[in-house]
Length: 171
Image 1 (cartoon, rainbow, N blue to C red):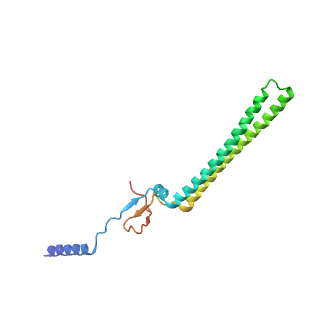
Image 2 (tube, rainbow, N blue to C red):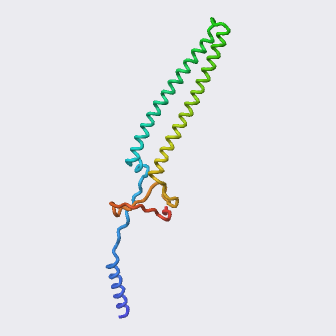
Image 3 (cartoon, helix red, strand yellow):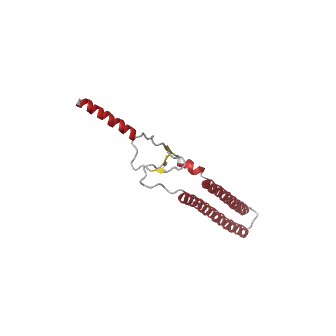
């Protein structure tokens, strides 16, 4: 009798616990590709449009500088041709060589200015891109084990909250 009473009590306890404990569905987790999310963001697209407009202005300025440099190089070539003219006197040849040397210095200065300008523009653009990313999309905390994406709960799609796991996932 005692064993049947124990068995009956065990079944009743199990049945009562089954009534009170409801099974919760497993949380749905999504892994997002943050690069795609950031590229599709409207502020990122606006920033890219601004950067493209600035890039076009810079390209116009660079082409202008290149044309000036080509003009200076052509002038230098003409002066070199004059120095090779056998009709010139010695004084005229020395004057043409001095002009050619001055022109060569000017061409080299223009090349140096062009290189500095190009480096400055590249540095400026990289800083603008970096500051925009830093301002709009701050880095994940260093304690987060996920570097490539955030985990979001899809239990309530209207209000997605980030889930940052505190332990590294088992592999």
